[in-house]
Image (cartoon, rainbow, N blue to C red; front, side, top):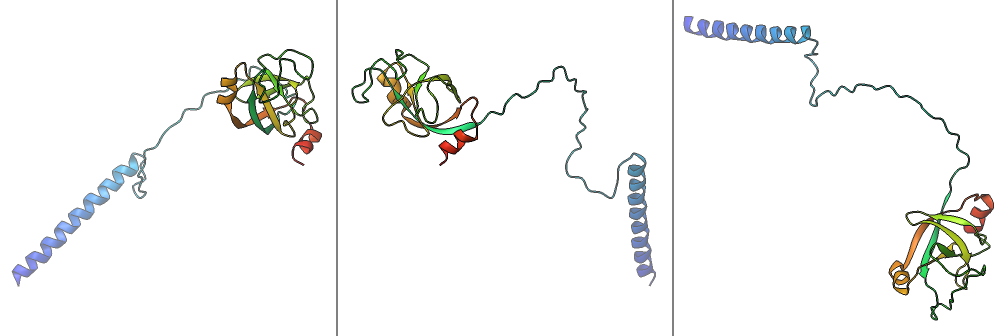
Length: 168
């Protein structure tokens, strides 16, 4: 019986020591500002805020509106396309010109094609209707290489009427 009694005392003693150590660790953690009961799996990141100084305020004059157009390339003196060196506005073809539907984009209008730059609407074409655009390239190879693409076009001073024309 004493042997059994010694085992029970032994188990109780070590259980008490374990509880004492556990409580001591919790107290030490709490004193150091660590919540011992919450389990955190990720590290805390402290971000220092930097002051922001406004040096210039600009007023937005107009909203930019971009439209989808189907674009192809063309070059001068291409009998397959029926082109010569003179545009619909009477100018000689040069880099930076596009053929458009004048009902959608008036001739002489400067447009921006996202990723390609600024162009001027100087020409028309029998197949250029609605939201189609033909971009002038100096060689047939460049025009063929461009192929047929869907592009974003910004038409300055575009308004509701233009959007209605494009999306009828």
